[in-house]
Image 1 (tube, rainbow, N blue to C red):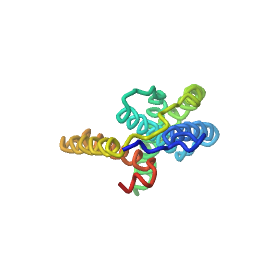
Image 2: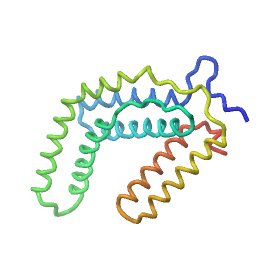
Image 3: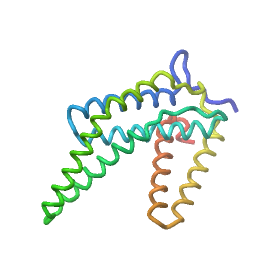
Amino acid sequence: MLPLQMCIRDRKNILHSIVEDSLHSIEQNLSFYLHHHSPEYIHKIRLHVKKIKSVYAFVNKVYSKKYPSPNLSKLFNEAGKIREVQLSLHFFNSLPDTPEECIVRLKKTENILISTFTQKTGRYLKSVRKFQGVVFFPKTLPDKKTIKKFFADQHKKANKELKKKNRKGVHQYRKRLKKIMYVYQLLPKKLQKN
């Protein structure tokens, strides 16, 4: 069976477009976050980093060649620290009798993390821009059998993590499921049905 043609005339490969769109979205949300420290921007930054990581995990598994991926781990981790504090604040603010000192301490931590993050935003933007325009994948997706094998392998690995029956295993299971979901969503509808 021939690989599915994903490039119509001069249009880019769908995987390429997803990575480029996600890099652009990260760049936009970093810029927005500099002016408005909304938790929504942090969430979107992390979401698009996860999508990029999922595409590269898929591409590196289904093609024989390894493709260099952008190193966005520092950005992802630093944004994650802020996100964690913001979620904790939201949770504690929803409780009826949270000690005020707990809220004050979390807000202080949040302010320090935000300050550090915004100081590094220039570096994060530079690393994102550096990678834009140099993303190239094959113009065709692999055959259906190869794609199905990728999903079967990922599902098997996810279940293996869940069988560990500990917190880390559950976390790894969730990460694998998200990766599967992101890759599935990027495939053309025709392939999703199969």
